[in-house]
Length: 342
Picture 1 (cartoon, rainbow, N blue to C red):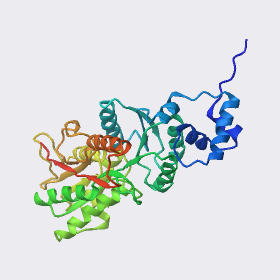
Picture 2 (picture 1 turned 90 degrees about the vertical axis):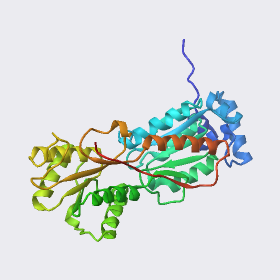
Picture 3 (picture 1 turned 180 degrees about the horizontal axis):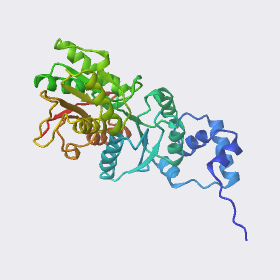
Picture 4 (picture 1 turned 135 degrees about the vertical axis):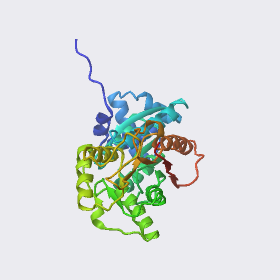
């Protein structure tokens, strides 16, 4: 006995001579589809005996209760925390999250968006992949579906977005070190291509200039995202520039590597909670994407970006957009917080 092959949405698209996304639009009853195209798709559905899935049927009725989430890199602490906050907030409202990843550079973003459309979602949250927002906005308009963006940095285009304030975070960290008496402050970590890093360095440099403090390009060190590389980089930095008394680290990994590097070099002791560089005080400040209670108990002054709270704000925002209660597009910025070392 043979089992009949299940007819898929791809089969319907082939039979009707249209794209899969067009079939999805017809099934959902959304978007801008001509009557002639709609008739072709419906005819193919009848001819092939295609059974509309629950999601498509729900879309015709108005809602599925499912929110799509496209994350550029779920391994990054910022996006992991954001996802946790978003998911918890939506589930508390009886919603479900359909999670996909677009790739660190957003190379799969449009394909993942099409997947969410085929399966049927009420709205989409896009976390990361800033360079593809124009194409995605056009797709969202085609499907008539709300999309809210989230990012670690500014988006170059006009979109509905919630993001942290990287420049303010860097200003906060730099001013904190200056108030503690440091005048020769260096920077460690991050990749030169990172927009988040660029915004943070912008805040760091602006604050140094504001206070009339020296700035040297060789004090801004790029290094890989590992504790070993950070330890080696800070040791080399202080060997060449022994008058530096404070270092701002790009993230938690860099900060921990820098701290271990100083400890290993015998230039810092954590026994009494005070950092030392021979007879000179060496302070570390860093940016963190994890909640305050998850920070390592080391002598580092942290500036936190509350990614989990940002995720909660995204949940509220996408639900507002779905229910048509949201204002027009806006750029909402989540302020950073300074967490002093213990």
